[in-house]
Image (cartoon, rainbow, N blue to C red; front, side, top):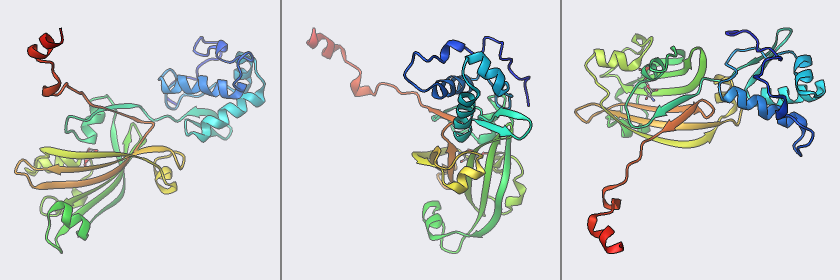
Length: 269
Ligand code: GLP
């Protein structure tokens, strides 16, 4: 537990948020209020919630209502109920990720004051499959290094990444203990440009388990193809990012033909 348990007497909990005057069942109103506090960062990951009895008193509802609200947030993966210890927040840090700069996971986390980590699922070499060979521009039979890992921010699972790098750039995947990009750069293989495709998906049971969340939770499937300055492809990465942990942000600019010219504005006036 990182922070002391919020005290039910603190104004953090707004008892006006739950009212029998509203049509929504009380437990849903309470769940909504707690969800907003968690997602808005007012209650942090690993914070303990006050005991059921305290919450019931604070919101003037029954303990059954509190229990139902806590259970629904537990089912969503936002809370964890630990036997004998209480109820704890288990929300991932929310990361705002710009889409226009090429950075590594380690750099992304460092720039937010978070510590990047990995749980290794696979770190092996093998022959490129026909799909990998086609995408990476390899001849049939060429070797690749495969890195499969859960990426962590402050110990919380954020994404599952499957990276494939031609062996001529990375003959020994065991050399990667931290940042892949750091090792590639040190060897003179600079990730220079990337194409990234994002699509919405939901997590399978296996992926949800690895990401410590519920099966069916929203996620983003991201495929990145990263190129060297010479144009050759350096890596093919297919990953699943937790939908509740990321906001992908992109800056849009008016395209040149849409900027009204002087002539257009004069004609319209
Ligand atoms: C991001 C990218 C991956 C890349 C990884 C490298 O997560 N989506 O394509 O392989 O960064 O991260 P690191 O250098 O921390 O291993």
